[in-house]
Image (tube, rainbow, N blue to C red; front, side, top):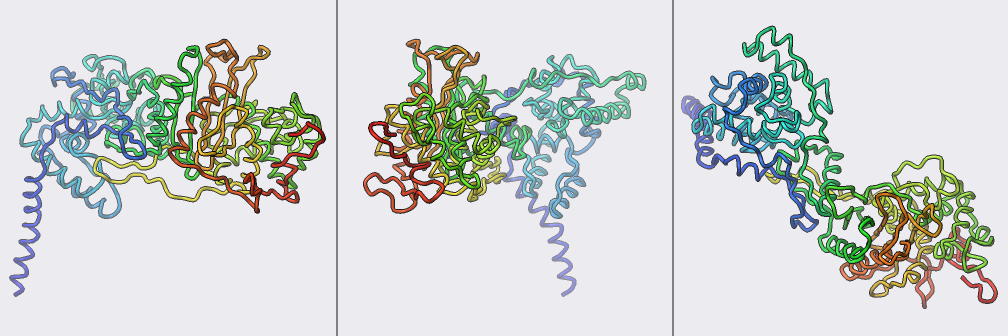
Length: 627
């Protein structure tokens, strides 16, 4: 009996690996480098999963050189860096694989690999850290070793391996780092490139010069040990300078409006810890928060409104879902290769004044707005105005007084609570009038917080990230957001903004209410403007529109009329939001108390800090001087 058990154990120990190997040999084919290239290209999708763009590095269309066209000293440098026994080993390091498996089982990662294994892993199989991938890697490595001569494997490796800066293969890497073909690489330059292979993004000399030099020294010493260079050549060698990344290769940007979305997604992925190497190697599938219908509506709205306008006008627009902070639509300009105006700092004008209102509500005790509104305003049509009328008539004097009452730093703090992240130094009373710069994206985020009842959600584009094998690398957590101020406070701020829509001559479908605010930034030339904004929200969508120029000069439309917030920006905003209402449906703002049965206006009790004759109401005045 014991003998039978022993025999069974021996058969299991010896036979099981053999069976696994045989099964793997039958099911794992050797993909071509071209097939692998397609799998490595990352894609960005809309929220519904439909494709938006492909993230193709400029080196993605690899320049495949014959082995003879790659200088011998460059080949020797790569062998010295990655596999000094390449021409004598069987194509895989069984000890290294066992070590890597052991690390996987104990929670670690990594393990030594031959060039053949690297070629298989990074080009043919994928870079997923798993036992399944290691299993497939071993099988395909053995197949490749049997099917291809060593020179062919080395040629494939040198033409497809990733070197950073969006460069696949030695030819594009040579252009990326030295702005010349691989045939002209020196020994030192070849050694630098060879040293980058293990960690191309982290060891880029432009990013980590000390690490790059350490790797270069390692490769040069390896060349000396392998008798590929003489001691004199080693002593004379100098660490080579490289061109700046911005002057070399990178990602192939799209020349349309989606190019800015792709750039913003890459930046967000980087902040999440997904670097350029992962994007280049792992064939990521990135699902965004961009709603395809909302994006199409926004782009059409921009094109419709700017058609026939002067060519020097620039525009940006951002829409955000207040419930999540997800960016529903994004337009940074029609040239993806140029400036992303959705993230350019500009003075927001009166679109910043709601944060002065918010500061007054958040002050302890809340500012008595009746004391402010009892003083004559600026150039307005009424002798006495409350904050709602002051916003509607752009009464700058009242908001400057409000900023003085609460303190300019309190206005900045309120804006930060809402979501403004720009640096605002040395604020004075004029900060309430939008003299400090913010971006359209930041302003949309802050307005979304007001729309969400004081709950802040970080604005974001990335929803999920999945690798080519279907492994989820990132999933946006479903969290409730961060409570910044009360729903009553947010509703009271919104109340001050609800008399503006009729002034723009527009109405949203289905009687949808909106809280909005235009902003016009004056020019040095009297009566002219340099920036024009329109911003606002419904309960389910916050959107901001900016129109300006590159030269910060007076804005004129096709009729030669100054561009202001009420005009091109407001028309664009309403065009987009009308579609949003039709798509998403009408949504009611929250009310507190019984409210007026005829108008639906909330009952903001006069005894509260948001009382009817303060934030949301209108002081009783005689005659026709009514707000």
